[in-house]
Amino acid sequence: MKTAMTSPRTLVLSLAAAGVIGAVGAGAYTSARASADAPVQTGQIAPITTGGTVTMPDFSTITARDGQAVVNISVTGTRKESAEDGEGDPNEAMREFLRRFGQGQQGGPRAQQAPEREVPVRGVGSGFIVSADGIILTNAHVVKDAKEVTVKLTDRREYSAKVLGADPKTDVAVIKIEAKNLPVLAIGNTKDLKAGEWVLAIGSPFGFENTVTAGVVSAKGRSLPDDGYVPFIQTDVPINPGNSGGPLLNTRGEVVGINSQIYSRSGGFQGVSFSIPIDVAIQVKDQIVATGKASHAKLGVAVQEVNQTFADSFKLLKPEGALVSNVEKGGPADQAGLRSGDVIRAVNGQEVVSSGDLPALIGQEKPGTSVNLDIWRDGGSKSISAKLGDAAEKGTQVAKNDDGANQGKLGLALRPLQPQEAREAQVDGGLLIADVGGPAAMAGVQAGDVLLAINGTQARSVEQVRDVVSKADKSVALLIQRDGNKIFVPVRIG
Image 1: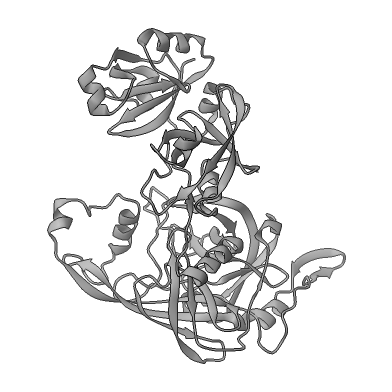
Image 2: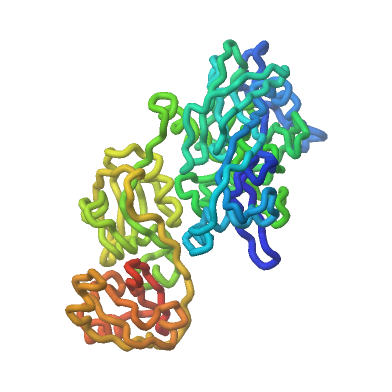
């Protein structure tokens, strides 16, 4: 299970993979599925009514009928570990979190000098059968580093499984056992799922097999840190270590998601669980079965959230969309004519409300396909067609934005870049920020930054910037470059 753990002050998403923490697995998500004897039924399970009051559905029918298609997965393998890291070290989970989010010390002198050793890892998780000939879906983190994978059915039969492929970007893996006439789960349609709808999971939390938990869909399309390719389903279904990789079922007994992550201060369930939509998982599964791997498209941009300050700066009616802060040179977006300061508001007609929506929409497309982008530029709407590239190629990732902004004057001291400074910064224009104070400093602008654009217009001179600021209503959006990275910073001026 990908678990969210926190310090006393912060709530963070822990991405320590279930079953690969130290020498003894921490547990992973599990769940259950359909019977081989009974045909798959997709009729709606009627809710119980008492005195005219509708209560929650009778999940016993789904449990009895569909539970046999969920499997238990045991994993053994090895992992490289620094010799200075103790086996079973209680701090390993936090180190793994820091490594996954690029905040660890793997690049420091101590990490470079410390020798590595192979340590055994064991883990447990779940999966569910989607094909009668033994195709099983689970989480990629459940089978990570696996040398041997054992699948146990509900009738206690055990099989050695082969990992056909795993896609870390979506946390979906496909494994196969050599068996026939197996029970399978009916596949639902995530698009039909609604917030407030009842859903359930069947699994082995903390090793308690065939445990049924239920709740409601809290929201759809959630974007999580470092998981931009998945528009998660958020539920309040109790999910704990032992549930990872198992199915999320609707009241028709159809699988609508794969249980993957939780947010937690304690490491256990605290009311917020996340599942991978089944349509995303099936798309990945089909690619893995056909080719052994999954591919994802890329647009080649870094984007930021559009907050109210940015909306005011770019004259948007609402703070929605994905603000392009950087365009990869020669990439698909560059070739299509996208530029910094554009706000992407829709992809093939599907709205982009937050910046996290964009990588999820693009990532589900195949490399080489063309998409139509609705963008906002220079105070008006524009349509652009872009041919997508392959996300496996090195390129720009989604950028996060610090939304700090305060009232007051701009507070920038600017001067033109000297030719040598422009060459070192690898920019064609812009102004050097010689000093900073007031709201610009509070928003995060620093002396030494290069101001490239203001409100999407290239910064060509001090006078031009002063003119733009004088005409701005509430705020301005500054595109700055620092250490080779570009980001928009919102600054309120009144």
